[in-house]
Image (cartoon, rainbow, N blue to C red; front, side, top):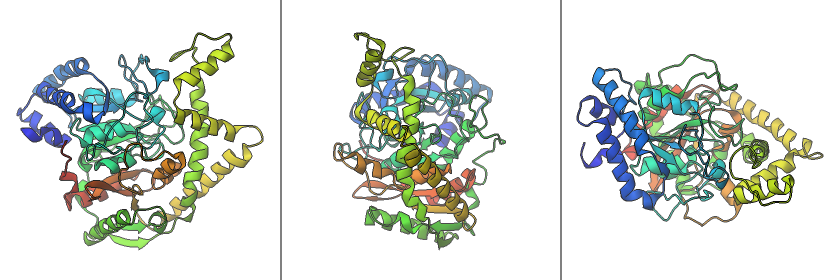
Length: 485
């Protein structure tokens, strides 16, 4: 466990802890030292929690010494700052929640704590998870560890940068339209968006409730499976939680892809996709075919409408969810106003950033009298068509493969047009609309910037996605490459 400790996988760190090559507190302290040394340049953390980590480390070390362990026991991790942490500020990177300290843990926070995981701190993000670059955070910029002049993606940019930069072996993010997979692609790591309802959303500060899903960002596919083992499962606190038996996602990882039916979607390789990104994606598909998969073309014409559907449904749900921030119950509040309505308006003007206000106004308009049928109702109807189209595709193939993002990471401040920024999610949004799982894994680089491969599957096909991703990962070396900061 020498200089490369920070780029080791969860499995490697767990093995070292069990072998007593390093103690839990030494492993945590090594990460805090790393954070102190380089995070002022990367900006992946909003807050670090050394006191909480040392308390957890004592308990985890006792578990290891007694042999009562899981693969996550004693291994450090980070949480995106929209996941509630009892006694620790949870800001959603917004001034509206600058001083909000939850009195409870999210279900996933508690689940990881129960495995003996060590919380290093909270990851920066786009405000209320609205963005594709982590530039809408009210507090700081996060930079891509591969090139500090570029964005890490968003909205889970802090978690992705932390994992890519050796600042945490894994993190949890949330994915509403690609916010796990897109930053995973930009930062050259693994990002998994599970099936809607497979992971409890209790304690996740809501953006768009029918789209939001929590998932892991990791360095390897095996690590993603190990984290899923800890966080997946039914939860009575979440009414959308899927009631199904918990399974071990690490079983079957090494079964290979011989005979697996892969669908290639031509609509994801056309206009707006960088030709070099498309070329690397097709090369990855050829590699899977070499490993024994059967490849065919599957058309999804309705997917082209997914982005338009998303930017009606997500802002509409955002408008409803963020109505609770009125300056009365909790959060930022403006008191210098002549009446309650003026105080409400001033609170939202001062507490929310530009992108959040834009989406709230879009949603309020789409839900307003006279426009509801033309926009929100129509978007829900097209959503049904997109879901049916995916269902039909998965009767022919086991998985679908696309690029994760149209381009590699762009420069900080480069994209000012919100429409252009929104288009960054064109490949990832359809999975959220349909509620299906998707994973992004590194499949190459262009001028030193990572490129991601997206694998999509039918509902509850996480085991198949992980097996496919693992087969590709182990036949290449992209997952073993790390940035130099």
